[in-house]
Image 1: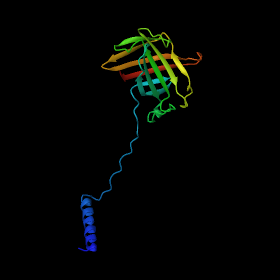
Image 2 (image 1 turned 90 degrees about the vertical axis):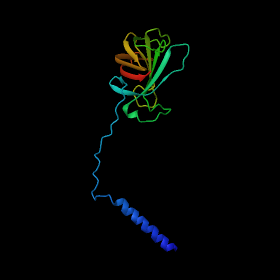
Image 3 (image 1 turned 180 degrees about the vertical axis):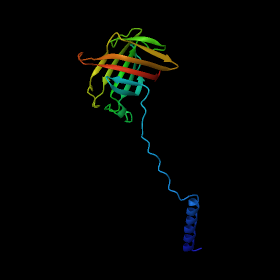
Image 4 (image 1 turned 60 degrees about the vertical axis):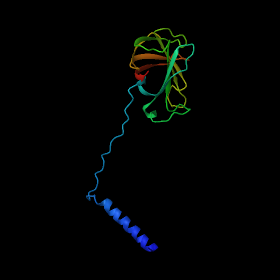
Amino acid sequence: MKRKELLMLFVAMLVLFALASCGEDDGTIPEEEEEQEETTEAPDSWVLVNSDSFFIVSRTALPAGSGPFRYQINFASRDQLDQNNNDGGAASTFAIGFAFESRPTETGTFTFTDDRFTINSGELNLYQTFFLNTGHAREEKNYISESGVTVDVDITDGILSSDLQSLTMVNEADDTDSFTLKWSLNISW
Protein backbone atom coordinates (compact mmCIF):
# COMPACT_ATOMS: atom_id res chain seq x y z
CA MET A 1 0.00 0.00 0.00
CA LYS A 2 1.05 3.44 -0.71
CA ARG A 3 1.43 6.10 1.87
CA LYS A 4 -1.70 7.93 0.66
CA GLU A 5 -3.81 4.74 0.91
CA LEU A 6 -2.55 4.08 4.46
CA LEU A 7 -3.40 7.62 5.46
CA MET A 8 -6.92 7.29 3.99
CA LEU A 9 -7.41 3.97 5.83
CA PHE A 10 -6.28 5.57 9.08
CA VAL A 11 -8.66 8.54 8.61
CA ALA A 12 -11.53 6.16 7.83
CA MET A 13 -10.86 4.18 11.00
CA LEU A 14 -10.87 7.38 13.05
CA VAL A 15 -14.21 8.40 11.53
CA LEU A 16 -15.69 4.95 12.27
CA PHE A 17 -14.40 5.08 15.81
CA ALA A 18 -15.86 8.57 16.32
CA LEU A 19 -19.24 7.47 14.96
CA ALA A 20 -19.26 4.37 17.14
CA SER A 21 -18.57 6.34 20.29
CA CYS A 22 -21.36 8.80 19.48
CA GLY A 23 -23.91 6.07 18.80
CA GLU A 24 -25.31 6.13 22.33
CA ASP A 25 -25.92 9.88 22.31
CA ASP A 26 -29.67 10.54 22.46
CA GLY A 27 -29.21 14.09 21.20
CA THR A 28 -30.18 15.76 24.47
CA ILE A 29 -28.17 18.42 26.18
CA PRO A 30 -26.95 17.25 29.56
CA GLU A 31 -28.60 18.97 32.51
CA GLU A 32 -26.43 21.42 34.34
CA GLU A 33 -25.37 20.06 37.70
CA GLU A 34 -26.89 22.08 40.49
CA GLU A 35 -24.23 24.29 41.98
CA GLN A 36 -23.63 23.35 45.59
CA GLU A 37 -22.29 25.71 48.18
CA GLU A 38 -18.93 24.52 49.37
CA THR A 39 -18.99 24.16 53.12
CA THR A 40 -16.29 23.02 55.44
CA GLU A 41 -17.63 21.69 58.69
CA ALA A 42 -15.86 22.96 61.72
CA PRO A 43 -13.93 20.30 63.63
CA ASP A 44 -15.65 18.98 66.74
CA SER A 45 -12.92 20.44 68.97
CA TRP A 46 -12.84 24.21 69.38
CA VAL A 47 -11.69 27.02 71.62
CA LEU A 48 -13.31 30.41 72.11
CA VAL A 49 -11.13 33.40 72.89
CA ASN A 50 -13.77 35.85 74.07
CA SER A 51 -16.24 35.18 71.23
CA ASP A 52 -13.81 34.20 68.40
CA SER A 53 -13.69 30.50 67.40
CA PHE A 54 -10.44 28.61 66.79
CA PHE A 55 -9.87 24.98 65.80
CA ILE A 56 -7.08 22.43 66.28
CA VAL A 57 -4.50 22.30 63.48
CA SER A 58 -1.74 20.36 65.24
CA ARG A 59 -0.95 18.82 68.58
CA THR A 60 2.02 17.13 70.15
CA ALA A 61 3.31 15.84 73.45
CA LEU A 62 6.44 17.81 74.28
CA PRO A 63 9.62 15.88 75.07
CA ALA A 64 9.62 14.30 78.49
CA GLY A 65 11.89 15.72 81.11
CA SER A 66 12.08 15.76 84.85
CA GLY A 67 9.18 18.22 85.11
CA PRO A 68 5.47 18.10 84.35
CA PHE A 69 3.90 16.36 81.34
CA ARG A 70 3.37 19.03 78.66
CA TYR A 71 1.06 18.80 75.66
CA GLN A 72 0.84 21.55 73.03
CA ILE A 73 -2.14 22.21 70.76
CA ASN A 74 -2.00 24.80 67.96
CA PHE A 75 -5.26 26.51 67.03
CA ALA A 76 -6.32 28.29 63.82
CA SER A 77 -9.22 30.46 62.79
CA ARG A 78 -11.71 29.07 60.26
CA ASP A 79 -9.91 31.07 57.51
CA GLN A 80 -6.57 29.51 58.43
CA LEU A 81 -7.76 25.88 58.37
CA ASP A 82 -6.77 25.32 54.72
CA GLN A 83 -3.41 27.10 54.90
CA ASN A 84 -0.10 25.25 55.14
CA ASN A 85 2.05 25.66 58.22
CA ASN A 86 4.97 28.03 57.87
CA ASP A 87 7.65 29.57 60.03
CA GLY A 88 5.71 32.79 60.48
CA GLY A 89 2.92 30.93 62.27
CA ALA A 90 0.30 32.25 59.84
CA ALA A 91 -1.39 28.85 59.63
CA SER A 92 -2.27 28.99 63.31
CA THR A 93 -3.02 31.91 65.58
CA PHE A 94 -1.87 30.53 68.91
CA ALA A 95 -0.71 27.51 70.86
CA ILE A 96 -1.91 26.36 74.23
CA GLY A 97 0.47 24.33 76.35
CA PHE A 98 -1.27 22.00 78.79
CA ALA A 99 0.84 20.99 81.80
CA PHE A 100 -0.17 18.14 84.12
CA GLU A 101 1.90 16.52 86.88
CA SER A 102 1.96 13.42 84.66
CA ARG A 103 0.06 12.31 81.57
CA PRO A 104 -3.54 11.67 82.67
CA THR A 105 -4.81 8.18 81.87
CA GLU A 106 -8.13 8.25 83.71
CA THR A 107 -11.18 10.49 83.91
CA GLY A 108 -10.84 13.17 86.56
CA THR A 109 -11.34 16.75 87.66
CA PHE A 110 -8.41 19.15 87.47
CA THR A 111 -7.94 22.52 89.16
CA PHE A 112 -6.19 25.21 87.13
CA THR A 113 -3.02 26.72 88.55
CA ASP A 114 -1.01 29.75 87.49
CA ASP A 115 2.27 28.01 88.36
CA ARG A 116 3.90 26.89 85.11
CA PHE A 117 6.68 24.83 86.64
CA THR A 118 5.37 23.09 89.76
CA ILE A 119 2.24 21.15 88.87
CA ASN A 120 0.80 19.00 91.64
CA SER A 121 -1.48 15.99 91.36
CA GLY A 122 -4.93 17.07 90.20
CA GLU A 123 -3.68 20.38 88.80
CA LEU A 124 -3.54 21.73 85.26
CA ASN A 125 -1.70 24.79 83.96
CA LEU A 126 -2.36 26.45 80.60
CA TYR A 127 0.19 28.64 78.88
CA GLN A 128 -1.06 30.34 75.72
CA THR A 129 1.19 32.01 73.16
CA PHE A 130 -0.18 34.16 70.33
CA PHE A 131 2.09 33.85 67.29
CA LEU A 132 3.71 36.64 65.26
CA ASN A 133 2.42 37.72 61.83
CA THR A 134 -1.16 36.56 62.36
CA GLY A 135 -2.86 39.95 62.56
CA HIS A 136 -4.48 38.97 65.86
CA ALA A 137 -4.74 41.79 68.40
CA ARG A 138 -2.85 39.67 70.96
CA GLU A 139 0.05 38.53 68.76
CA GLU A 140 3.41 38.30 70.55
CA LYS A 141 1.71 38.01 73.95
CA ASN A 142 1.69 35.13 76.42
CA TYR A 143 -1.14 34.26 78.80
CA ILE A 144 -1.39 31.97 81.79
CA SER A 145 -4.40 30.28 83.39
CA GLU A 146 -5.92 31.84 86.47
CA SER A 147 -5.88 29.58 89.53
CA GLY A 148 -8.88 27.98 91.19
CA VAL A 149 -11.27 27.03 88.35
CA THR A 150 -11.92 23.31 87.87
CA VAL A 151 -12.52 21.33 84.67
CA ASP A 152 -13.69 17.77 84.13
CA VAL A 153 -11.61 15.64 81.77
CA ASP A 154 -12.99 12.35 80.47
CA ILE A 155 -10.54 9.81 79.05
CA THR A 156 -12.31 6.85 77.48
CA ASP A 157 -11.06 4.49 74.76
CA GLY A 158 -8.10 6.74 73.94
CA ILE A 159 -10.20 9.91 73.55
CA LEU A 160 -9.82 12.91 75.85
CA SER A 161 -13.04 14.94 76.08
CA SER A 162 -13.56 18.10 78.06
CA ASP A 163 -15.91 21.08 78.10
CA LEU A 164 -14.72 24.27 79.77
CA GLN A 165 -17.35 26.93 80.38
CA SER A 166 -15.12 29.83 81.42
CA LEU A 167 -11.51 30.40 82.40
CA THR A 168 -9.69 33.73 82.69
CA MET A 169 -6.35 33.83 80.90
CA VAL A 170 -4.06 36.60 82.21
CA ASN A 171 -1.27 38.29 80.26
CA GLU A 172 2.00 37.12 81.76
CA ALA A 173 3.57 40.59 81.45
CA ASP A 174 0.51 42.74 82.23
CA ASP A 175 -2.10 41.40 84.67
CA THR A 176 -4.58 44.11 83.58
CA ASP A 177 -4.87 42.34 80.19
CA SER A 178 -7.00 39.20 80.28
CA PHE A 179 -9.68 37.36 78.33
CA THR A 180 -12.15 34.51 78.77
CA LEU A 181 -11.29 31.10 77.34
CA LYS A 182 -13.88 28.36 76.67
CA TRP A 183 -13.48 25.01 74.93
CA SER A 184 -14.94 21.76 73.78
CA LEU A 185 -12.18 19.22 73.21
CA ASN A 186 -12.43 15.71 71.76
CA ILE A 187 -8.94 14.51 70.87
CA SER A 188 -7.08 11.23 70.49
CA TRP A 189 -5.10 10.76 73.64
